[in-house]
Length: 378
Image 1 (tube, helix red, strand yellow):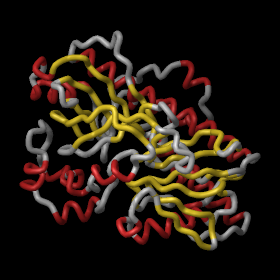
Image 2 (cartoon, rainbow, N blue to C red):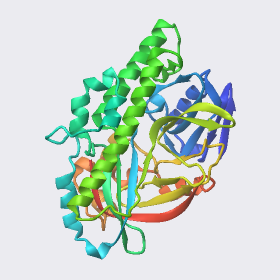
Image 3 (cartoon, helix red, strand yellow):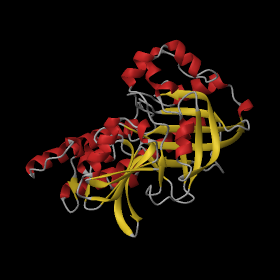
C-alpha cells in the first residue's frame, strides 16, 4: 500500500503509484478534498479513470453522498456457483448456444413484462415507477459492455458458472438523473467543485433520502437480475440448483457500515466488500484466470478488495491497437465470439490480474482459481 498526502484527506492505494494514470490520481485527490470525507480514501489495485470518481475506489463519507461515487450501473456485480459437475459432462459449443438463446444481451429484453416481486415494488419511488415497465422486461438480462456469462474450470475439471451484470437500463437512467440533480443543487448553493461530476446530495434533504431509497432498490434489483439469469441458464442446461450456494456480490453500490467505530456511508465503485470471511469474486477477462476469494477484513481498505483487473487502456485505444487475430490468439481455448465488435474487451486491454492479486494479498485469500472455457459477452 502507498499513501498520498497533501492538502486533502490521505489517499491509500494498493498499487504502485507509477502504474496509475495521472488522471486517475487527480480524480482521487479531487475526492479526498471533499469536506465530508471520513478518514481517508482507499483505492484498490485495479484503480483507473472513471466518471467523477475513479473505478476501484472505496469512499467513506459522513453527511453527504456523491452519486458518481456509486456509478451509473447501480448494483453491478458478480455471481458464481459451483455446479459440482465435471466439464466432461458438457458440450461447450452447445453450452454457448444455450446461454445465448436463453439470456437476452445488449439492449435486448424479454418480450413479456416479468413479475419483479412485491418486495422490490414496495420500496420503489416515483422515479422507479416511471421506468417500471422497462425494469420488468430487463430483469434476467445481461446488458452490454464488459458484462459476461462464463462456464469455468476450477483446475480440477469441475465446472463453475459465473456471470457479471447489474441493474440494466433502469439503474443507469436513475443514476444519470440523480447526478444531474446534484449538479443543479451545486449551482443553487453556489458550491464550486474541482470536478463538477463530484456533485453531491446532503443528508437530511429530500433529494438525499430519495437517492438512498432508489439506490437500495436498484441494488436489490441487480441482485435479483443475476439470480434470474442463473435460474434460467441452469434450467436450460437441466441442472438443479438444489444444494448449490451462489456467491452474489455487488461492486458498484452504497451501504451504511461501521468503520473505525463510526457509522458511515460507504460507496464502492469497482470494489467488493471483503470483511473477514466474506466470499467474493474477482474476475479476469476472457482469456485469463478469475478468482473466488475470502476477505481478510483489512480496516485500512474499509474491508474491501478489487473487483477485477481494471482496464489499462480505453475501449477506443484497444480497438486501435488490436486486431481480430490478436483476439483469437488471446482467447485460444475459449468458446466465445471472436469478431471485431468485441475487440474492446480483449484481455490485453486489461491490467495483469496476477499483479493485482499480489498487491492485495493483505485484503483477500484465494479460495478457487477459475479459467473460462465458454464466454458469452454482452
